[in-house]
Image (tube, rainbow, N blue to C red):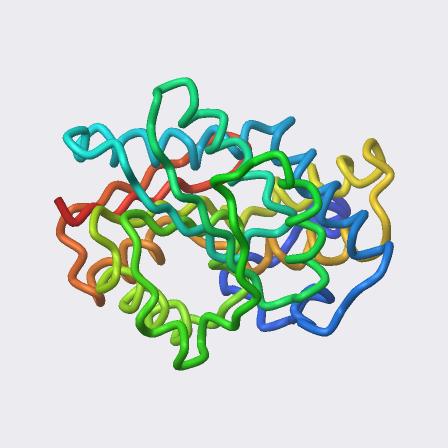
Length: 245
């Protein structure tokens, strides 16, 4: 019985998978991609994922309260849902937020622009963050919401070094815990939300590309991040806040 249970429920999570996701193809476009982007945003809302990023931004803003005019860049912005949430948050607190979404997929950027047409303080750029043109992009706060796990370890170190150098206030990272339980629960979620093939396969791969807490601490030590907090959050997420002030 124990062996049968292990066969059914065991998911290997000791190491990050090297498998790629369908969405990693920057030339991808079409209705299936649009549906996947929107479903990801809905699931993030339902499971409280946006709140994790929002709380991280709020913690950094409290340290930087003397300046109410802030530029925030969302790396891998998807359909722009996080930026629209931030725009509403800024309106409530009477903050002047300049919000910029960056994604390497032109179709994704155009979809985000359409959904954000009512928000005058949100703009978008189609850009590969590993191109030299990104080296000089600066802002107050960089966001990485469900983006970091798309990269290999050496790419993560390179990106975070760049973001830390060019951020005035800090970085907020919201990403997945690599967990067998999370993997099985997401399979159930796929059924409930009737996710398409791309959303289902990429979601499961994303979990296996996620992180263990000690890995995030190791990145921090390698990059010499002194002011940082790493907290587990529901649903199987890590909130990693890196402050420069």
